[in-house]
Length: 123
Image 1 (spheres, rainbow, N blue to C red):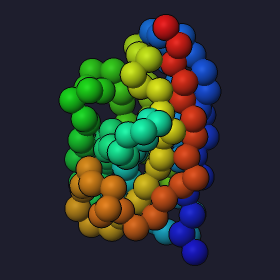
Image 2: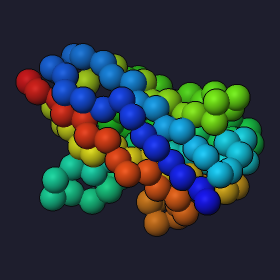
Image 3: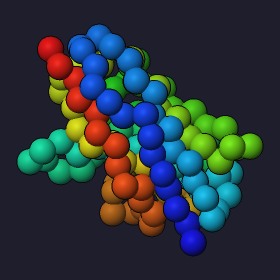
Image 4: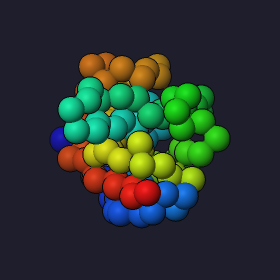
């Protein structure tokens, strides 16, 4: 059974940093695309970033470029999202997700999801 477990959320002031972690079990990290998504109250879930296990290609949403960094550690089957210069508009529940093969920023194209971790950024 494939499972994803996120951790690292919390509350910070604007300008602060957080690092989210996502541990994948039941599957190999290097054959999956790992994505981070977020959903704010009353809004649709949106793609934040993804990293391909096969070729290491990376995608960032425009809203987070230059502030967020995605990385992976295959030996630990873990993907990270380093979030710097956080803004109040980054407040959301952040989800980790996995899909085989090619990358995508569409939530509907991901097979497996974590339970989510809350990130709250105050001004």
